[in-house]
Image (cartoon, rainbow, N blue to C red; front, side):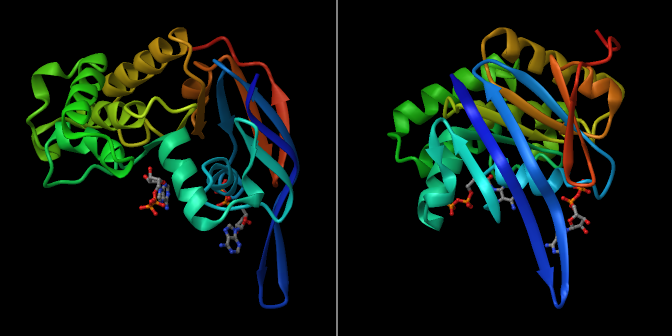
Length: 230
Ligand code: ADP
Ligand code: ADP
């Protein structure tokens, strides 16, 4: 079954009398358990597409369905609910709250979802153990390396058991060793059946995915991954 189904999606920005077509005629279907990288140069429309896939913005043409739900029909409140329950976000800047421990950061999406305190704690500890940080749960972000912070962020993305992991340049702030750790973790998640969309401008990062989609001037070109980095 398709986790996401993008059909003829376009996005135009109107600034004064100038109209920019950031995305045009995007068709993209991603099935359960697929690991897909989206690549493209600066200005190609990656951020715009990521915002649409992440339900942070809606298309100006076409339809986007996430687990069968037509996102274009939803209110702002419903979109926020979809983001919190169906999507696990991983960002370049980690976006952890500095004053909270790793455990509290990972519990946050469950707090929004109204999960009980004991259940939150149990699931957050589980998620942190799953990313190899069982011994760091009481550390605050500044007490962790960049790679460890990103693993906390990945645990936070996983804790709600989302339909889709959406990672935007997740290794953009990491040294090569931590990049390797984070990519190995994505490989493991993929083997475990997770659906992952990774946005990157780095060829060797994209090559880890099973499918690479290239975006140029707001249009997609699909292709096979390069056999590097394996
Ligand atoms: P990328 O992430 O690949 O660098 P973007 O999605 O940010 O590309 O941008 C794609 C195109 O859309 C660019 O031409 C950019 O200038 C334009 N664009 C993006 N956001 C806006 C906006 N809010 N208003 C007007 N134009 C925008
Ligand atoms: P709520 O309105 O319920 O507080 P938000 O819209 O703030 O929900 O956030 C819902 C989800 O979307 C969160 O997981 C958050 O990390 C993500 N999110 C919110 N704003 C952005 C953004 N500008 N870029 C990327 N992700 C975002």
